Length: 273
Image (tube, rainbow, N blue to C red):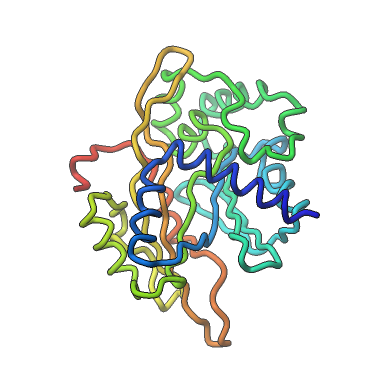
């Protein structure tokens, strides 16, 4: 049966994610201490547009486990494309996979990406747990910094590889917290810094989706030329609204997600407090 294997994959993804982003466990515990039910809305992944590891490659395991492709999205400013996937069992989190359009960048960045992808073995890509493979290539911090000058997204992926970029809590499942504003206030009161790019809350009831997120934790990463501290993963929060047809909106809003991507940007964190 696919369900036990899907549950195993989700547990692997979560375990890897909280190791990189311990603030997620702390937030989960905080919300449970308030008597709230913590339900995953979606899990997001990043990749490059190389056909060997693109959206379809990352999605393959989820498709085998019953997920179905849904809407596609374009992010012109970030030079990304994306697609989301849903499982027939609505208790399962949606999956959001984005990929960098490398043709939109310099020869230097494209060559760097090519050098990374060429290090991956075919058998690694074919693994059923490919979405939680981790970083399958060697990369220097110098290369990471050069990539970051053109694309924070490209650099993050070079450093971290294949894993959940973020999990997202469905605010609709809460009992006593009835707005994203109230949740954000609770998080900030407990010392968690939010991504304020485009405002604390991205989206609105008018587009049927409101989102906010923490800033990615800064964590040490081993590069080929030493250990350096860089942004890791973050936690997102989504409140979905009912559409005119009476159904709860299940998609994503590109304009909002564009700002959410910036949760992993390297920045002066003292300005975010």
